[in-house]
Length: 511
Image (cartoon, rainbow, N blue to C red; front, side, top):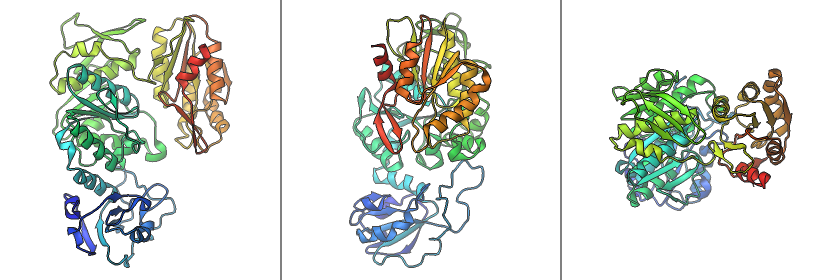
């Protein structure tokens, strides 16, 4: 890799010329000074807790060939309400702004934003593999994972080779790719471009991926062009990062500034913001409550499936959807809109072949005549959706086990507790991933919302005991929702990750 080639489409200035300058061969790219190799490139990334500029000397001692630094000429990195995040550490004071003496023999490149530059550098390093793929990006607070899986399943059912990237892992077809470094919903640019390159080598045509607000705010998908961008919905979440709902909404909208076509939820009030970022690109709407381009009508929630028709198709032309719930109708509509945008045929057949997604309203088999459902609901809207959907096919009581993650947005905890108390018949408040917070303090904050509703509830801090308690109290016709962790097979207590699966624990409780 020649440094000049890596800098293609990256606005930059050369502050210092080392050996061979930008004509030098680069051995590797790193954002952690501990991973720097001799002759490598080190990008100084400003994070939420640390600043890569602090490690310039350490990178130089490791034999780095070039370093990319950020320009600190302005106080704020991005304009207010842009949806982008200023990720500087809380104690940051611009202490590297006036640095003049860089390590000798090292080429120093200055850019406006090292995160943004990293996205282009990573793409260039792998030969811009995304240009050989058709990308479909799905964003929103809830429904990203299921909608992504529905789109991928439909493409695969109709004979296309697919890749999928998201919360539930990375796959090509039915084969899980062993990508140990990909730890987030949307991987970092160096990881993401490596995945794209691997998928191109495997002859993948379509890649369907979840695009989180974090990824959009931190430029993880900068420079990518999506054939279709899909918007599911927007409700309160991640305010610990974005600060305001406006910033959160605008971060999501960035996906549509990078999309050739959009499929958006007409029933969500944030859709207008998403559409405004499309420019002249076309879009289609979907929904249930309002007249949309894809308007689901005559919906029937049956014990084994949901059926519906589309207003723009002949009467009686029914869709069979086996994953349960009203919100899965929304997810299916997003997938149908994407399939239409891609010009696919046999869409109704592909919908009938859809399966549920692990950890999303996932049934735990039993012979007790009850429904036990594991779901990833971890926001106020998610809790509303899962309880409302379970009500549609439950004849008895609805019991919910609810916790909230530690070191995350605290403002949503009482709201989730209130919704659970208002919509469920009984609540068991428990621990989720407490991380470095006291789990009992988290539960107390949830309880602040549950208690005033008057609904009966208990507190059981141990999640395993809570699940056993919930299963034991069920009677025929009842439903138990185990909310919050979904597909996760771990629990984070302190800084340690322990094996724990809601699904496995519920199965064991029946046994």
